Image (cartoon, rainbow, N blue to C red; front, top):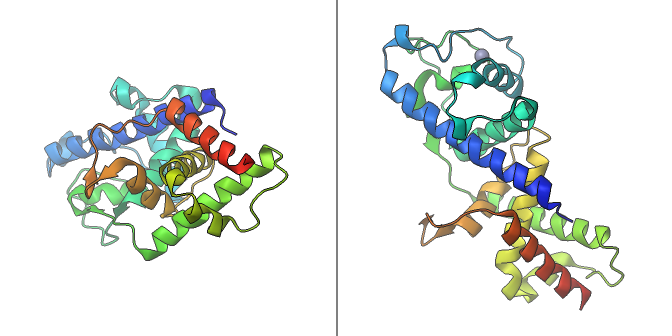
Length: 231
Ligand SMILES: [Zn+2]
């Protein structure tokens, strides 16, 4: 079951990692081809992995980020996990890296995607992503039932979900939150979370600007699901 303190922290880090993307996007677009003024990518990392490159970059530039995009030093690792998961899940990034006119000098898997931020394309959840989202919902309910030590758990959760349409939003929300916590610990790239996000934060095919993720609403969603499971 969700721990409200852990949820609060993850939601804050998640929001900050999104703010970091917005800030970076704006900065790089402003800089354009003025490579000499770009000090955001002035160091070179080992070409290890996307996550490790991001972690090195974030640790190096932490002090330059605006306060609403800056994690505490002790939270840099979960923050880097959330930031890299967000990038990999939300965008199709062209791997046709262009010659460095952007002032980015590092060719590690992380930095090299920023050679041309204008090439970032927003990803849309496809059939596979929606199927993954369904798996995440099933996994969430299984874990919840196990942790709550329920005796009469539905034997087929996949069939149980559509028989409780009034819980549909709650299940999407809780499964999204569980996946977010998992993502702060491992570099996950599954697209299921993108489909879940659309189910909870989008209305009429666009982002509902009034939507705000909160520990309180997630915990309320979980208790409604739990109550139904206990019936
Ligand atoms: Zn790098």
